[in-house]
Amino acid sequence: MKTINLQLRWVWILLDLFMIYLASFVAWFIRYELRWFRNVEPGYYSNIESYTFLFLGLSIVLILTFNGNQVYNIRRSTSWVDEVYRLANGVFVGTIIVMAATFGLRPLAFSRLLFLYDAVLIIGFLGFARGLRRYLEFRLRAKGINVVNLLIVGAGDIGLAVMRAVFAQPNLGYRVVGFVDNDSELGITDIGRFKALGSLKELETILESQIVDEVIVTLPWRDQQEISDLVQLCERRGIRARVVPDIFQLNLSKVSVEELGGVPLIGMKLTKFTESGIFAKRILDVVIVLSLMPLVIPIFFLISIMIRIESNGPIFFTQTRVGRFGRHFRIYKFRSMEVDAEKHQNELLELNQAAAPLFKIPKDPRLTWMGRWLRKSSLDELPQLINVLQGEMSIVGPRPGLPVEVEQYKNWHRQRLDVLPGITGLWQVSGRSDVAFDEMCLLDIYYIENWSLQQDVILILRTVPKVFLGRGAY
Image 1 (cartoon, rainbow, N blue to C red):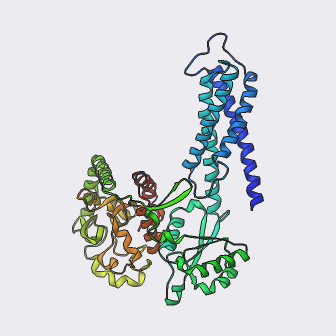
Image 2 (cartoon, rainbow, N blue to C red; image 1 turned 30 degrees about the horizontal axis):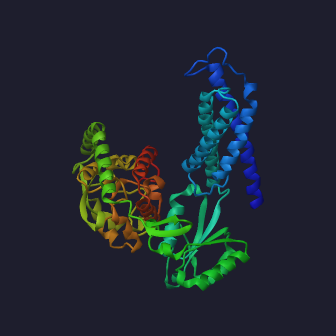
Image 3 (cartoon, one colour; image 1 turned 90 degrees about the vertical axis):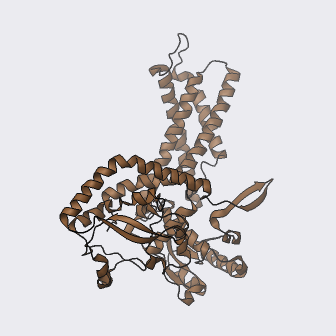
C-alpha cells in the first residue's frame, strides 16, 4: 500500500508540473496575445521563449511549497475546499518568492500582471483536477472499489458517533461491516444497516469470517489491557487498528484541541446552537418562507381546489407531533388520505415496512389519487411553512415524530429532540423513507453536532432535486 501511495504521489507531482506549465503558457497568451484588461505597450512584448526558464523555475518552487503545505498528503477526511486552500496558499507563497527573485535579478523584465494571471489559472487548473479526481473516486466507491471495510469495537456514544460520521459522509469511502460490543450478550441489536456481529471475545473469529481493512476501538480507557490486546490482535493479522481517546467520551462535538508551545491543550467548545446561532437560523427560516410566499400561495389554492373536488372532508390534515425538548405542537399538511384513515391504521400493521417505531407503507391503500401525487412530490408538506412562521419548526432539522413513536425512543435517539424539527434535513436528502429509523437518527444527530448556516443552505439546495425525483417518498 505504501508503494502504491508513493507511486500515486509521483504521478500527481508530474501531473501538477504539466498543469502548472500549461497554466503559465495560457497566462502568457492572455497577457501578450489576447491582451485582456491591459494593452502591451510598444517595446514591452515578450515571446514565450523569454519566459521558458521562469516558468520552469516557478514549477519547481511551487512543487516545493505544495509539499510544505501537505498537498500530497491528503487524507480521506480532507474536504475539497481544504485541499484547494492548501494549493492556493502554496501558489501565492511560491509566486511571491519567484517574483521577488526575478525583480531582484532583472527589474521590470517580466510582466507583473502575468504573475497574477498565472496564479489564478494554476489554482483553477489544479483545483479542477482535484475535483475531477474526487468525482471519479466517488463513482468508484459507489461500485465498491477503493472502499475501506471498517469494524467498530464498542457501541457506546463514541461508537455511535463514528457510525454517524461514516453514514453522513459516504464520500469518505468507508463501509462499516458491523460492530462488536460486550453488551451484545445482553441482547443489543443491529443499528440500521450496521450489524451487531457479536461480543469482544468473538473478535478473532469475526476477523477470520469478515473482510476487514481497519478497526476503530471506542472502548472506555479503563479497559486499557483489553484495548492493547485488541490492537495487537489486529496487528498480527495485518489490519490497521485505531483507538479513540477516552477524553472524547465527554462529548465528541464539544472538544477542542489547541497547542501551547508544543503542549496539547484539550478544552470544551460551546455548542454551535448558541443563542446567536439559533437567532441566525430563525432569520434564515423567516426570510426563506417570506420569499417563497408569492410562489406558494397560488399552489396552495390550486391544491386546495383539487383536494376538495376529489373528495369531501377537510383540505388540511393536522396531527400532534413532538418538537424541541419534547414539546407537543400541531403540524399542518395537505390531506392525502381518506378522512378516517387513522382509524384503520391498526388493520394495516402487517403491511408496515418500516422498523419500529415508524409506520410506513409504500402503497398505502388509504391514500387518495391526489394524495399519492402529493406524497410523491412532497407537496403535502407545504403547509408546514405555517409551522415555520409560528416558530414550531425550522426549514432544516429532524422530522418531528408522533408522541407514540417518541415513547419508544432509546436514550441516544432523544438527542434529535435538542433542536427544532424541520421540513427537510440530512435524512431526507440521504434516502428519505428508504433509510431505516436508526440511520435516520444517526444522520439527525450528526446534523446537530455539525450544524452551520452554510450546511442549512446546502441541504435546502440538495432537497430540490430529491423532491422532483420523488425517490424514497411515500
